[in-house]
Length: 264
Image (cartoon, rainbow, N blue to C red):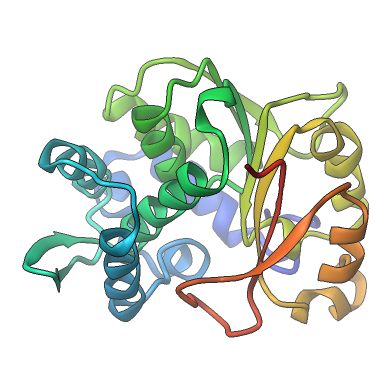
């Protein structure tokens, strides 16, 4: 989240997202642009390999068709691709997509996925996590919360890949109503928000969510001057029955953690 709401307080990222949503040449290669790789497409091939191994070792089994579906995320935006090998299996994909599949495995493993009908995601990137969850789980509605400029690119990405379902695009700077959901998800984004924005989301979304999965980007951003937010301990204490788990595999920092609630 950008534009006065997070530590990434500049206009480059939302402006580029909006530009790419309106210009085909930029859209075709948006995942390689330095402005975009700084915020979203920054996972390394090593992280992709670790996520691939994590998925294959999990009790969740995906078919070849499942993998082909997941990897369609990489057919748009021209991301940097790598080859991954593990346990006799090989795929070619982006580290970002591999991590989205890893998150899907966590959700299936930790939560009763049959009870998840409405998902709200804060900090949505290009909609890759949304697409994978919509394909894999029987969801009735998916709320995407971010800056309007970011949502413009997300909406275009999901439309190009013909993602069906009730997907709602919510301006994260103006949430006037409570937004209850069965499941809340935010990968890194929530921990990078300013405290007033975090408070708004806690009041209107998180406190209404029956379950949740938040990847916490260390506590570096909790002391970032005007853009500081809550610490991990402070945030976890606000949610009844929240558990703090290590991030496995580690993606950006060994200080990363998962905050989960409503687990099995």
